[in-house]
Length: 199
Length: 293
Ligand SMILES: C[S@@+](CC[C@H](N)C(=O)[O-])C[C@H]1O[C@@H](n2cnc3c(N)ncnc32)[C@H](O)[C@@H]1O
Image (cartoon, rainbow over all chains, first blue to last red; front, side, top):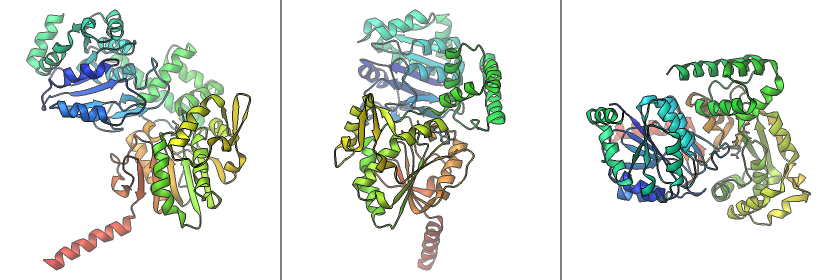
């Protein structure tokens, strides 16, 4: 398979965007999906219960030292940065906020780019800040595939706009088309086709 | 990726240099945090490469101390995660109440906020006088702040809210005196506290503890080092002693997952499982089954 992991960043309006994307993914989706959603500093598992109730694919909170497995959607816990280690496990940190955020999308994206290189897909969704832009650029530089939600379909457009300004080769995709694109990318022959089309 | 590969080697060499020169071993810390700290310091200090940083560390002890502070990430709060302290009151205090003496170890206590929180809790439960708290960290600078117990006043509002949520029985203002922009914690809270330098990577077992609190420290360690530290805690605990971890830390993925039993729902509070007795229990069960057959 061309790609094996997807990282996603979302902020304001992100709950709705995630619902649209994740509900299209089948239970046997062959990649891991790792998500940072900026939320309140306390979370009570509501988000995960809700997503599980509407998705076929399994959704869970990312645990410290947990091994990352395909076919699972992991959500960063509130109030910690989520990082990926070389042995493909998660690690957490409570150092200072990055882009006024913890978890920060850039932190996840940058550590993921270091580990997965060209096998990574990065997705920046709706949001009212600039988190995720430099992380997505880093994924681009490491040879990964980058997707930005079409700002016209975003509840808050500054996060996608800022990512567009930094990432030259990213595909700008309407919200309802992101899920189908991820599924297509998960099937290797189609992935090669799509990649060629982009270049 | 060539760039990533060289960077990795440079980081290994930097950590090796720190170990040889200053005796601090960061080689078994989780790499992504360390790397982020190194890159951040690199851009703040105007140093161009990690190799250059290695040279600087070897020749400039002040720079080393800055880096040590970077690596140790001392972020902390009083009554952080109030519901953890609530669970302490409800699930652990009753088990400690009948003991003649109570020994508590805060490993990685940072600037001490957690230690004062524990002292307040024990005081309110009427247990402080028979308690001894060992507060340790590997960073001398933060230990010094712990001992002084002086904190910026602008954090008191949050701490007061945490204190109330944690089930505090009195008024938080009873425990400190405000002076200018700072508060000084009441010295009676320090009476039974011993502050000491202790490095979880290299130092050994620490007395027969009834309760070990080590929160938000293990997230910075890799699995190998976590295993070492869980073993160290196991050996430092009295039979049926308690181990408290940060709200996102777990023994689940470690080699010692069977040696600690989770006891409080929603909190990472564990009780030491006595090997001998649990093995004996399994043996009993087996013979029982045989007898039945
Ligand atoms: C994020 S703070 C946690 C503070 C507090 N326990 C809390 O949860 O609020 C981590 C602390 O662990 C300490 N630490 C890191 N490595 C250590 C080691 N090898 N031995 C002892 N302490 C260590 C750091 O100096 C820092 O003060």
